[in-house]
Length: 121
Image (cartoon, rainbow, N blue to C red; front, side, top):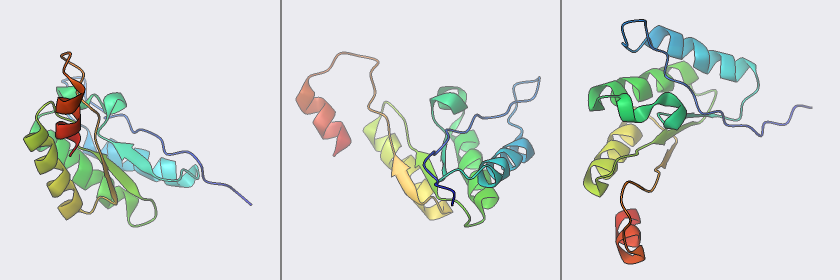
């Protein structure tokens, strides 16, 4: 019996011209399925989300949803320094079919704990 424990963070494949290669991303998601991953997570730090435009992030999530084909859960990251933008990304990701929404707490600036809690809420 195989135990699925790993949820890999998918890299974002780029062309030599720094454009997203969405067909390659779909193949990576399929590889994760064939490798018995428990799900996939993107766009996160390994996907270099901070280099992606908002439309590229959306294309990444929609492509991963398509590649998962219901075989794997997709954990969509909605990372952004702006809580409002992170929430917007989260709502769109859920609409596109992401199974789980996660976010990273921004760490660009030292902020008081109550502001971090407000961001997370």
